[in-house]
Amino acid sequence: MGETDELLLLANGVYGALVDAKINIPLEQLRDSGKLYVLKDDLLARGIPASAPPQATLISYEGFVDLVVKHQNTYNWV
Amino acid sequence: MQKKLLFISHKTPYGSFAAKETLDAALASAAFGQDISLLFKGDGVYQLLPQQNSSLLKRKSIGAILGALELYEVNKVFICEQSLLSRGLENIKPLIKVHVLNNLSLQVLFSEQDHILSF
Picture (tube, rainbow over the protein chains, first blue to last red):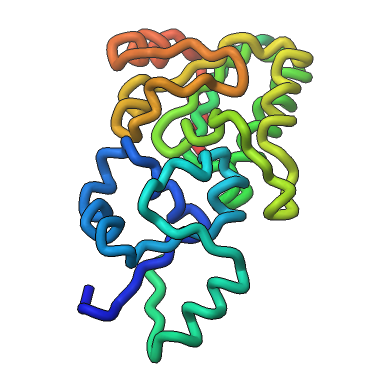
C-alpha cells in the first residue's frame, strides 16, 4: 500500500478484523497508522464484537461512500 | 435403510447461501430418519460465533437454523479444533452445544461414516 492508501474490510473480509486471528498480522501495521476501516454492519452481523478491531475505524455505508469519493481509485480484492 | 451421514460445513454464514443450504440438507436428511453427524470445519466455524445479527444484512439467522438441529434430533454436532485455533477462536462460546474434535478424533469420525458430504 502507498502512503495515502487506505483499506476497508467488508463482507467476509471483516473476519480479518478479529484480533487473535493469526492470518491478520500484516493488518497490525495498518491499524497503527489509522488507515484501516471496517464496515460496521458486516462486522456486527457476523457476531464479531465492535471492540474486536481496536485501532480500526468502524464506518457505516455513508462512510463507505465518503471513502470512495475521497480516493481517486478503488480496488476490490474479491 | 438408515445410513450414517456426515455433513461437513466449510463456509462462512453470510458470504453465500452455502452455509444455510448445508444445514437445510442435514435437517432434511434427519427428517428422513438418517443418522446425521454435522461438522463445522475451516471457515464454517464462523457460523458458531455468538451475538450474530443477520437482520443487518436482511438475511435469515444461521443461529435460528442451528437451533432447529436439536428439534430434528441432530445431536452429533462437532467443530474442528484446528480450524478454531488458526482463527483465534478457541475461547468463543459457540451458539449451540458442539463437541470439539482434534485431528485424530476427526479421523475416527470420518471412518465411522457410510457417506461424507462436504460443502
